[in-house]
Amino acid sequence: MIFTESKIKRLLVHVLLWICFSMFSISVASIEVGAVPNEMMMRLLFNPILFYANSLYLVPYFLLNRKIGWYILSSILLLIIFNYVIISVFGSSFFNFLDRPIQTENDLLKINNIRYIAPTVFSLSFFLLGGVFGLVSNFYKRDKQNQIRVKAQKEMELQFLRTQLKPHFLFNTLNSIYFLVRSKSDDAPEAVITLSELMRYMLYEVGKGKVSLEKEINYINNYISLQKLRLHQSEHIKIKVDGDYKYLRIYPLLLISFIENAFKHGTTSNGETFIDIDIAVKNDHLHFKVKNIIGLTKKDIDNSGIGMENIKTQLEYLYKDNYELMTTNEDGYYNVDLKIKLI
Image 1 (cartoon, helix red, strand yellow):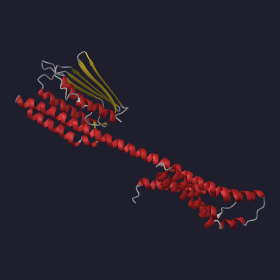
Image 2: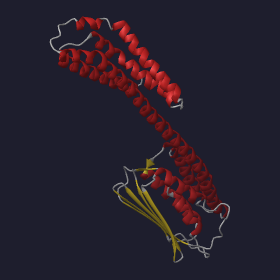
Image 3: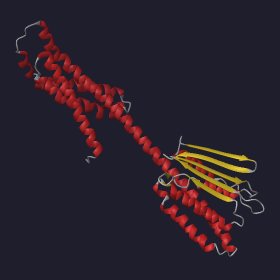
Image 4: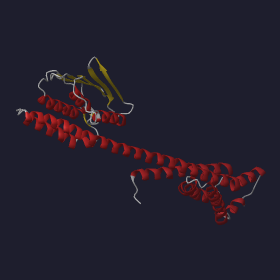
């Protein structure tokens, strides 16, 4: 059995609690009758057997499996056998304690309480405490397992969403480079280098969980630069970044789908592209806005919106209750307004 740090800590807590219980019982006996009976000492040493027998065996194997009858029967038998063994083996030592002169009836009552009532109450109390402890421990154990299972499921779903997003991004970008190559543009080599930088980021940074917000913004800038290379009229494409974001971190690829969507639909019939991107960072809050003209690009019914739906799902998983997303379609412009608390 491997003892981890957490197991050692739990063991120490249990030992400390048993010492406290024992000291309390010894103190009460000493105050009431001036001495501690040997039988009582033996019970203090063996009462943990009742506690752990109930919490580690009876509760998990009978009570939690809804075998109520077996649990009750086993509990009664355990208590009877336990007390019988204690009295049979160690009970004779208690008579030495009773040989002391009894001065009053109150002394006799105290002794009988110590001999009969107190041990029974303590043994039953430890047994019941073991049952409560077993139920509570099992509840937290199952709750923790459920949280781990839900987290693993979410991670699998996010990985699936990202595998959808990467090909979608790659197809769009390759399509952009295709235009440059077809038109024999001198910008084609630069576009290939920029694409390699984008792919390197996606392959080596995305799988690490949160990434530097600075790297994510650099990724966005590279993507915009690549898109500008294929556009004939890119003077109306603007990006503004304000605030200190050097030490903040964000889950990757959360913003790029909105920008992809803007480039996909933000070009008019005469080839003019109108896109305005505003990224503002204040303290640990990110305010991301994208505004693009609604062009006349024919909508692909089968593939349109894959990235948008994915990003909304990821936001809900990764920043639940810590983000606000609003999209509007007004006066021929599509607006995205996203606020994220970068926790």
